[in-house]
Amino acid sequence: MNKLKPPVNIHEHYHAHVYFEQATVELAKALCEQAADLFNIKLGRLHQKPIGPHLMWSCQLTFSSNHFEKLIPWLDDNREGLTILVHGLTADNLKDHTDYAYWLGDEVELNLALFRNA
Image (cartoon, rainbow, N blue to C red; front, side, top):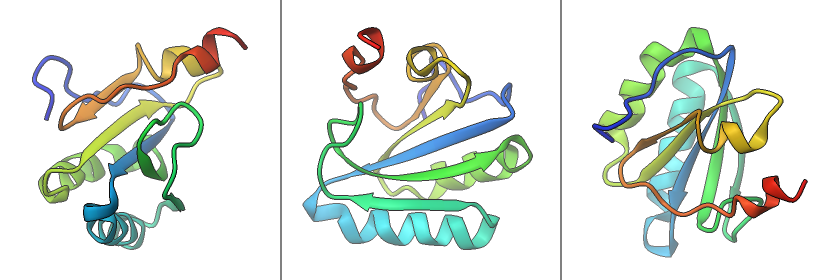
């Protein structure tokens, strides 16, 4: 977990983006499916291409603040080296992916220009 900025539960709703590549697609798929089942949260599509600001392949989990305290440690304990971006959902996409962004694993580059040009 990123020691500089640990995830904090300050928003009503969140996304978690699980990043993967060809060698880890099955691991990411299993992690996302298990999280969705265990915590009864919404599982998005498994994108095997960059999409939106995400330059790596990813899968999105959508959850609320009442799942945060149990889900985030579970994701961190079970990610097996995968990187996960956790961010709040507000009306400001740029802040969501910067100021309100937390990383489980290594931070990866995002295409923030999408939000700056909006």
